[in-house]
Length: 118
Image 1 (cartoon, rainbow, N blue to C red):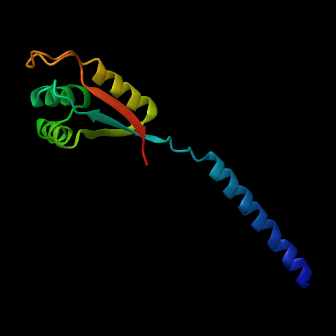
Image 2: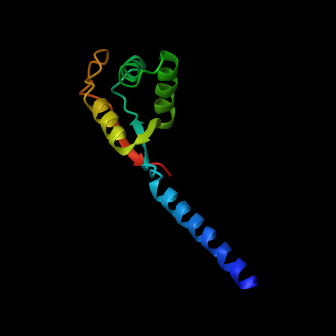
């Protein structure tokens, strides 16, 4: 009688494992995340950075100022962490934003890169 009860327990365990394996396969895998990094230069004013971040990212002026200050002090600032495709779009939008009208010698947009989240 012991053998029969053991074999009847084995079937539900196998079924449970199969269900768990199917559920794990159905879980969507999270896409790798990427940082959008803004790089400092001497050709753009705080006003430019703040306006760009407001228009492209929807940041309030206070957050734009904080990022502008970080770029100025540290040489770079993390602006956004998102999927690779979205990070590439935001980087390209920064590159296409245009020159700073306040700075006479400004030659174009700020520089930005993307890097994988560590």
